Length: 505
Image (tube, rainbow, N blue to C red; front, side, top):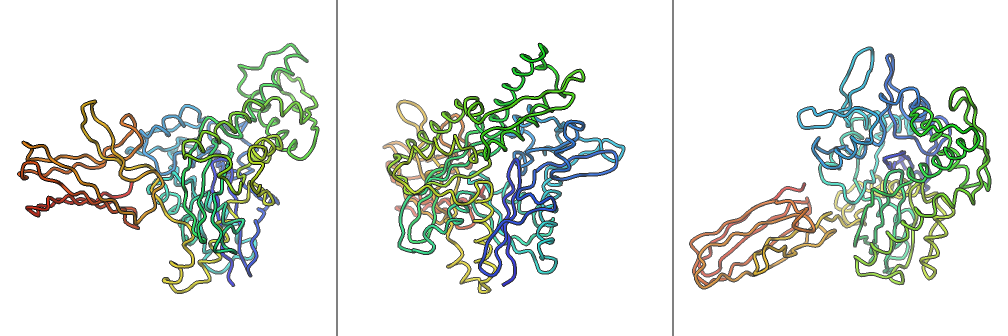
């Protein structure tokens, strides 16, 4: 069979896996690394991607783009972009309502779109695929994205991958890819159960519960916490190293941006080493005023520095389960994803929470999502008949990401009445009846996306007039397979009807 690829484009790093001849594995890049940093840097003469860009960050911070996934497919005024700007070392400007990076490149100040950054990273991944023997063919691929990604974000990331040279067969959710990686429900089509997928990436944590029923996957709940992530573990270790340097030299470097960057890089390297070894020697040449820094870090010391973060992760998981009206005992299997889940202290803490379920940890957490995507790509690329693809390849039930409500006026004020919960599967239907008051001849209702009045977004309004007093209005909602929401309002005695179709956000 032709090679088929699974690509996981994360905030911090990207991973590429391949399925060929019924075998799936991760492809190492030209440096022998099985993941590639999602970093793009610009200089007067060239653009660099991956590790080359990362190694030059300290000298070129303002022209080095990181974490582009956070703003890809978003508008400039999106709250996520506003938050991203605060922490970005690269200037982000408004260009026709879209965020653009402003960098010094080829001896001029240039504006580069997030899509251009994503294309550069995908091209780097394509080079890795081609080095594996994929010089011919179409590079059929499946992308894995966060379950909360909007249609616009999915389109943006798919377009970037297509532009780079990948042929995108499908976009699936990251939790689904993780479950696929372990073939849950695929070899035993009668398996039914709940799988908890916990991901600790560089800049966020995510807990998802996936229902597996007769080989079909449906996300029951998925929550992201942007206050958690592997980067804050690096920051915690950096704080310890700063204090150690001050103890050794009596020098405070907390206001020296360049010194902190060098120390942060050393902390990240040490953090990764401590996932495999009990001790690591940390050395930074000329950290401050020509002084070198050398110290030994034990895993116990590192575990102590991140203990609060680990506790927050377990509390986060418990809250997600509670909000979904599930308990720890409801979980049948647990999958850990993301580089942060390589930390033994976190693995133990999360595993201890679920003593009665299967802990699936034979696949590297940084690679599990790409492997699951590659397995899905392998299924889809073999099947030539579109009808067969639909029936066999669609193990992932596509869902909306946010709940749908209508606003109702009550004696206590406006309230949201649920229509579809978050992660309701597409092709769902809902019927509701509303009775008019004795003297009421008009009917207005508003459709919202969101969980509360404070954060809900108005999608549409429907007005019906000249209705019989005291009559009943029938509302029918249909979440179509393409993500569109079709709504029809009918007054049955007069057969008056109004309808609207709302495009996916």
